[in-house]
Amino acid sequence: MTRLRAVGLVSGWGAGVAALPADAPAAADGRRVIPVPRPALDGERFRRATRECLLGVAAVEAMLAEGGLTRDAIRGADTALLYVTAAAYGASNRLFVGAGGASTARTAGGLAEARRGSASATPAGGRGETRRGDASATPGGAPGEESREGRAGTLHFPYTAPSAVPAEVAIEYGLTGGYVILVGGARATIDAIWQAARLLAARRCRRALVLAVETFAECEDLWARGRWAARGPLVEAAACALLEGDGHVGYGPADGPAPLETLAVRRAGEILACAPLVAAALAREAGQPEARLTGEWRGRRAAVTLALPAAGTPALV
Image (cartoon, rainbow, N blue to C red; front, side):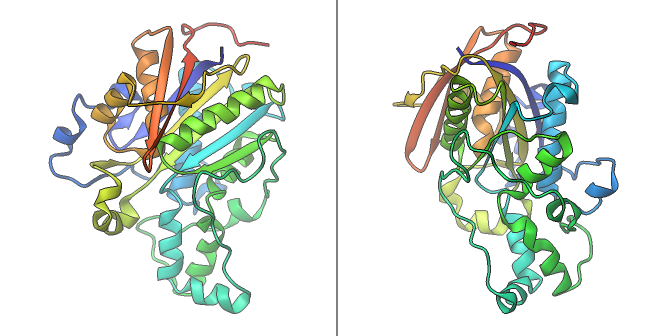
């Protein structure tokens, strides 16, 4: 069975599952969005990176710390990266359009269209190409920074694609294995775990990172208009799980939410793609030997099962 080696979480409630309240709606006290402060990461490369990119890096760092691992444990071609989001690229798109960047890009030759839905950017097992200059060196317009119209819009443009977050993560940790990008909510994360299992079963990687990032603050008014899409409170979060094993996860449809899904939503709030990873973290914290994870998005629900070895268990070779 595929097993969860480590899982890290950063959310609007704080670091890790220990920071989650017992009842997220009650703890929100009427607040529509519970934001995550901009992570303070060292390095010139991160000075102007977007908040969602920084959260992706922070989630991987939290996962390494939780598992007692070094960066060398995931570096190289033996680690696959699977990234999921439903909302995190919205902030840069809004800043780009609001700063007048859309008209600038059209003049230069047209906008790149970000595809929506649970579609992978590369086939499972394929080698994804990560650009190692543009995304990391381009200012992303952090919240609170003053931007110049036109110029700021152009600088936001590389970050309007969902691929910006995994690109930054791949650069930071030296990940050169296969990658997949899925756009959607919790069901897309279940699909990402399944895709990771397929890569492991085919021996196209020795380990896989499943990363989910969700941000809402920059588009809070838009989410308020579309309140049917999420119950609330909307809680910003980033979570990362390290998977290894034989690739078996028992993937299939689910008739309803598993108890862990219900618990994750009650404790964390509406965290969209991060929910299955938070559920796994809660099961791991409770000492459960395995976790049945479910996730729903737009009326479709799926399930997987992961083994949860005890802390300190050696990694599979």
